[in-house]
Amino acid sequence: MKKTGIFIILLILATALWYGSIVFLSGKSSIGNIAITSDNIFTLSHSLLLILFLTAVSYALVLLTLNVKFNQLAFEKNVQSSNMHLEIIALSSLIDECDTTLHRYDRWEEAGIKGDYMNAKTSVRDKMNLYRENLEKKYDDIQQLAFDKS
Figure 1 (cartoon, one colour):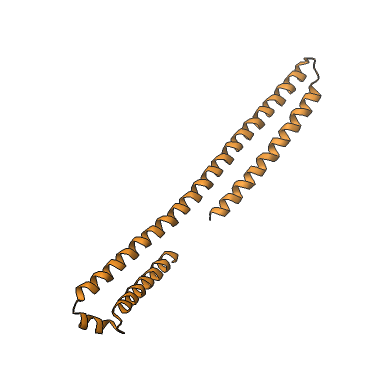
Figure 2 (cartoon, rainbow, N blue to C red):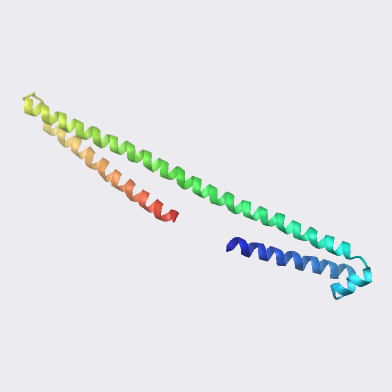
């Protein structure tokens, strides 16, 4: 609807400009009198077609500008979404690594291998909780981005 409104406004403006220029140049009050007295309908129709062509060209430029802006916004959101997905993949990998490390510490404790695994497990759990919180934030950001697109 916005594009149609722009075209109609440009068309009305062009027609008014054409009519105004003919009236201004001839000093007459109506197009019929100008056409009869000047006996040159071809010149009047040629100028009208030229104005309509220029209106169509300017409308095409407006449409191209709107499309470029839309494509730029879509590209920026796509890049932002891709970056968020990469961060989610990285955080998921870190959480998996923490799970593997905790499982390994549990096996070592069960096997009776000596070491200070309780402090290490606490440190790994704290990091894993931090990664999970960041992951949940990223999921929320993606949900917000999805709602902004629609």
